[in-house]
Length: 162
Ligand code: 4NP
Image (cartoon, rainbow, N blue to C red; front, side, top):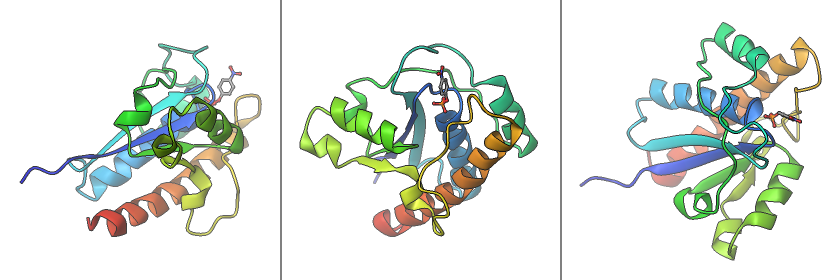
């Protein structure tokens, strides 16, 4: 029997730094676990200002050093996302608030989570926006995301018996 894919959408403000990194990291972790045919991963932004752009060049460089390919194109969250995805995961509290405001119904609201809630050892309560900072901010984004993505996969494994 062909099983439905589990669909995950990562969301930040611009969809050029944090959520494309979450997408790339989760895709690699899922591929390494041999689960790419079961889990689909995408990302989007709560604003459309950078629509069509590749991820920020600084974020791409920091990601590449850890073997992550950030090649998605920025797009804003759309209404159909709330029906199409099973998990809609914001990088910080503002993302979560904005998503809940856009959500069309209660079922959609229940799909919305904060990324750090999946971290096995939550040393941070959000993924800090690296856009206006230096190199250490981009490294911190990757560190927290790697941890949270592993936690997310563990949760999916137990919830869906993967
Ligand atoms: P992101 O970072 O939300 O992680 O993609 C940002 C990207 C762009 C802007 C802010 C944050 N901006 O103000 O244009």
